[in-house]
Image 1: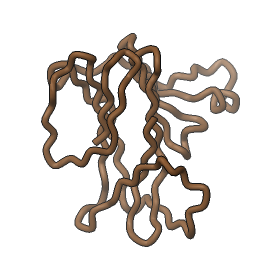
Image 2: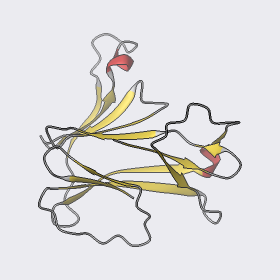
Image 3: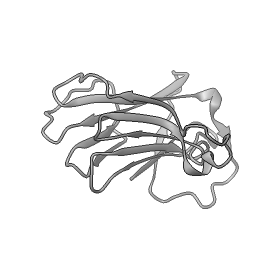
Length: 156
């Protein structure tokens, strides 16, 4: 699992994002700490991608409502064996000022803002087990995870 969040100057922080892989399949789950109680995204071996309400969020939704807000098929590959799965954009104006940081996870990866830009974009790429190398210019690696099927997850 990888946990990361954007941080700016003077104790300004965004949500903590969590990316988790299945240990038995190629599934990947993404949620943020604020919406994670209700909303999550998942990318499955079945080539279906889900954006929906979690079990705890479903309890407060209307009865009979589908827990999936959207179900799509995987996107086309952009390189042999690689798919661009997700982009998270965090504007500096969305960061919150927090005094002190008690109980912060020790495995949290900090993603700094740049003083010359108004936002930070983070991309998630999914690689098949036999995918070749890809070249990403002007990107900073955040994390690399292995999926249960031997595939990769790259966060940049």
